[in-house]
Length: 157
Image (cartoon, rainbow, N blue to C red; front, side, top):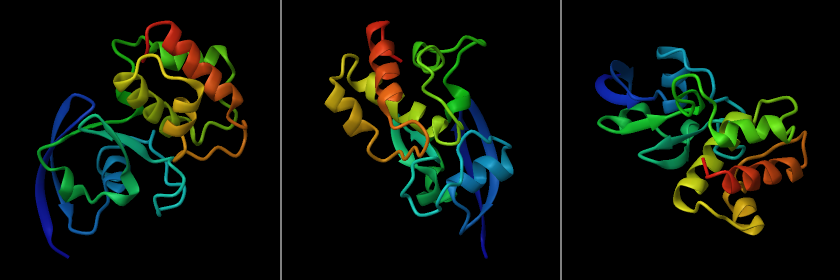
């Protein structure tokens, strides 16, 4: 089990870490940095609960090795709000009651954030397509889609 020195920017903060070869990005975030927004739902890249932005693109952090993010930028749900202010997307999730148990919410917010960054006015179908990798067993997605639409109408992510 070899150790590797990596430098990665996480939520705007440069981090210098020693990580083992087999450690995933999800494990690094939760165990080394104490960032608990990304969840371990399946460890197989199937549920999307661990979704983070890697250089602006949504990825399943359970499927990325920590050594692969050396020199890159990672944003988790904790990094979305700036100066204590919720983003329009986060506020829309509250306003539209798009959260029930909340386990999947961080990953869904990250996927929706990425969508709104590249497409500020998505159609309902584009929203559904962007969220296809995020499983939610509570809400049925209707309120989630409505919240993303509302955020888009208010100026995006």
